[in-house]
Length: 461
Image (cartoon, rainbow, N blue to C red; front, side, top):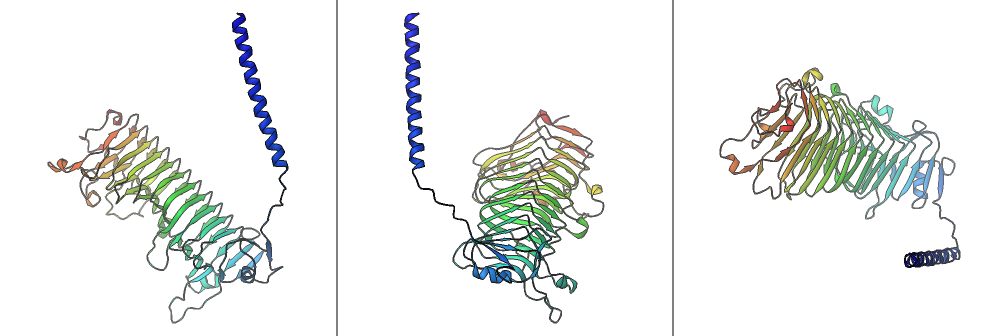
C-alpha cells in the first residue's frame, strides 16, 4: 500500500509540474502579446449620395478602392459603370431605387441593352457588394413595351455579393459569361425574365469558378430561372414560386463540376422544372435534403454526363415531393461508378390531373413517383454503381411508383420502363439496387416497373 501511495504521489507531482510549466508558457505569451503596440483598425472610407456627391456615378468615379457608398432614399435614374471594388448600400428595399434611363424604340426595334450597373475593370478581378436597395426596370420603358433593362452586366472574374436587395421586372438580373464568386442573401427577385444567364441569345448558364451561396431568398414569378455552372453550390432556405400558366422556366438549374454541393431546405412550387442538377467533368458530391417541391412539372431532375468517367455521390433525403408531373427523374450517363441514395422521401400525386391542362399531352413520363434511366456499358463502369432506395413513402401516383428503364436511349422510348433485350446484357451492365422499408400505396399502374425485375425484398409492400 505504501509503495502504491508513493507511486500515486509521484504521478500527482509530475502532473502538477506539467501544469505549472504550461501556465508559465501561457503567462509569457500574454506578456509578449501585451508588449506589441496596438494599431487602430483601418476602416474603409464611407461616402454619401447626394450629400457628398450629387450622383451615384460621380461617387463611383471619385471614391477609392474598397469604399462604401451610402445612398439616401429616393429614385436614381442612372447607368452606372463600376471600375473598382466597392460597396453600394441604400436605405432599404423600396426606399433606395436604382433604375436605368428611359429609352425609345426605333422603327419598332428594341434598343440596345440597358443595364443599371456595369462592372468594367479590364485585367483585374473586383468584388461588388450591393445591399439594402432596389434595382428595377424603368417603368416608362415597361409602358412603351421596351424590355431591354438589365440589372447588372459583369465582366469575367467579377465577384458579386447581394444582401437585403430587390431585383424587379428586369430582362435579366445578372448578365455575365462567368464570375468568380456569387453570394446572395435575403433578397427578392420578382417578375424578371431571367435571373442568372445570358439574355442576348438563348439562355446559357453563368460559369462560377469558385463558390455560389444562395441563402434565404425569395424568387417570385420569374419567367426564366437560375442557370449556373460551377464547382460548389450552397442553396439553403430559398422560396421559389413560379406561374405555370405564364410558361415559367426551370427554376434552379445547377451544373456541378467538382466538389460538394448542398441544396437544402428550399421551397419550389409551380415551376416548369423544380430543381435540376447536372453533373459533369469531375468527381462531385450532391446533397438534396429537406426540400418541399410542390406541383412542378419535373420536381427533381438529376442527370450525369461525366465525360471524364468520374465518381459521383448523390444523396436525396427527406424531401417532400407532392403533385406535378414526375417526382424524381434520374438519368445516369457514362460514369466511373458511385452511389445514389434516395432515403426517407415522400413522393405522391404525380400526374397531369394535378397540374390541370398545363402539360403537353405527349409526355411519356407523366405520373411516375421515381424513374431511373441508365444504359451503362460494361467498359465504362470501372467501379460499382450502387443505388440505395430505403424508407421512402411513394403513393397515389398516376403511373408507377418506381420505374426502371435500362434500354439504350431510354429517354426516347415511348414506354416508361423496360429491361434489355436478349444479348444486350453482354454489352450493358445493371446497377446494384438495394433498399428496405419502402411504403408503396395506391400507385395506379403499380408499384414497381418492370414488375418481373429482380427487385430487392425491401421494395415490396
